[in-house]
Image (cartoon, rainbow, N blue to C red):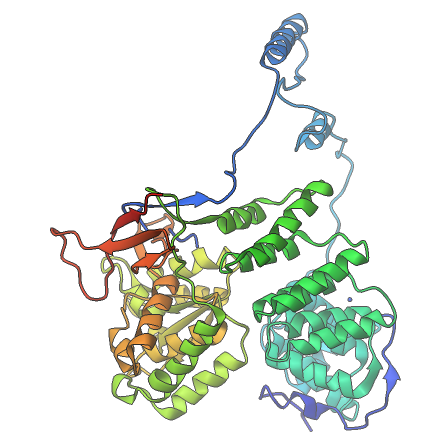
Length: 567
């Protein structure tokens, strides 16, 4: 009988419920751009980032003159030494190696066996036939899934391998095969599958080896069960000191779920083991800190900067940008006072999320054209996907530039975001998959390779799905649409909630301002400060309307009055 996977949640049923408690085998590892408003600027709190190269000008000029003399004296030589370089300058070692390249004339390229992996799930008969074609492979099952790992094959194809193995072995799949399948699930961020494998391993093995622990920790941190990753970290501690990657994953998970105390305690524990943290761990604290207020967290970040100094560590460009972003804040040009941030506090965000889920998603039937069944299907879709960084109203974005082919516009936007390693969700309609002059099938196939997709019925409205996915993904998630959401704001029950919704919208809605064929898509800056009347005690900042500018109710002024009390 053929045993074949079709459903996601059917995965654990392939194993018999014989919970032997053995030890696991030990041999298995945007660019988003607001035009400056009058009176407000971005300014660093304590220092500016500048490229500085201190040097003795007189000595440098002498060195340059000497270098010219040497080159004139030795005209036959093709090797030159840069006058502004030194032995420890970045890139100097590579330049030296290029001046003395090793001979590669007699080195032959390695011969590789060309094998085309399946691109869709196979049934048991098809796997049997493929195994017959590779008789020379001692352990075909482990070999084929190892090849899938190298090529990052889809989880569905790998899952059909496990179904085939389980059908031949009374529902049992070996540890090594299970760990390799787990690797693919973690790579593709298939959270539901990760949890299924986690439950199986927890039932079958008392302890795991370090590679499996590492995969499970990484897979669980972005799920609702992220605290169980901390329990796995404790299991590792019983036999060894966890790796910097284990600590990094747990710290990132804690920060993602807004638990600063857990993240900082893990960081201190890491340093206590004399382990040098990964730079991405330190970067995560700064990324989180840009939305934090108060001296307590700022002091923590200053401790990290001192750690970089004392250990002579150098941040990469992305990390340096995170540090710079944290230092920047909206400041008044007149008095230098910092104005209030546009970002919601964690309490405000949770309050707003609950209100929108109840009053807009569940209770706003008069404003949406969808069915309860379709909304439930979408909620399940979001539940079993990792949190998104960007949610796109696909049809809305595709129609922003009428002269361009709609599928090409959508492809350009998604491709640019995907290059930044962002988790992107595109919300679309089913008619977008039909080939025509505005929607090319090959464009849509490229889009689906770079982003997650949910296609609703053609009569459905996208906004409820857009709001649900963005809020469900967390406070970091942004969304792209031209829709100003005025109907949904009107669904909210009181002025306070409507105010919070508008504030959240201003800090999360990206606008595309231009797109030229063959060039990057340009996004408008998101505001970093809140446009409301505000005071710091001895000063007032009051946004006001320009007499010659007509402002709609969903817009905010761009001019500010700065009042400062004289002492």
